Length: 209
Image 1: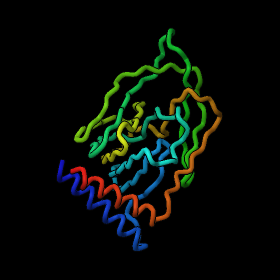
Image 2: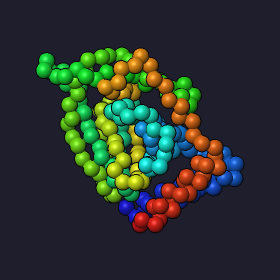
Image 3: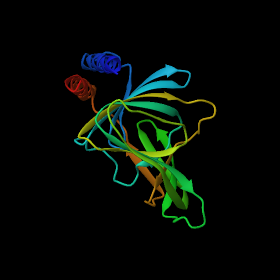
């Protein structure tokens, strides 16, 4: 794991240096509605490398209640530092299920994502509930509903993702909220602030090694 940490620190510092020098960045950076900061490096053939930087000091999270979601890619995630609580869910189609949730489909237009209501009166069942610590590898297939909650003050995960011909086309969010549509601006801060954030988390990884 120490080798992975060192590689991630170097990757973040290289990207921070490029952005601070107004060079062409190699990663797509964005604010995520779940409250973390994401960087993505496309590797081709549906594969990508992603870093998720978590902090309770971040202030752009969407209102509570939109945490349950799935992805159009499968992933394996290594928690390098911090603590996260992960839950896995499934739609409960039994007659006795409490239909308190709604399903939304997520669409993207530039830096904005929007959710459109497609189904109401859905039941939901928790299949797994775990708290992840540094060194934990957490994997999920595309289309599996889950949620992640930051437990520690900060956390950092590195993800390997894969989207293929069997992956869903559109991601979903499941929520007890009922709105016809919801939008979120994922635009990142200016490059200088992204550089500072990457440098700060790189130092965080080194200090907690």
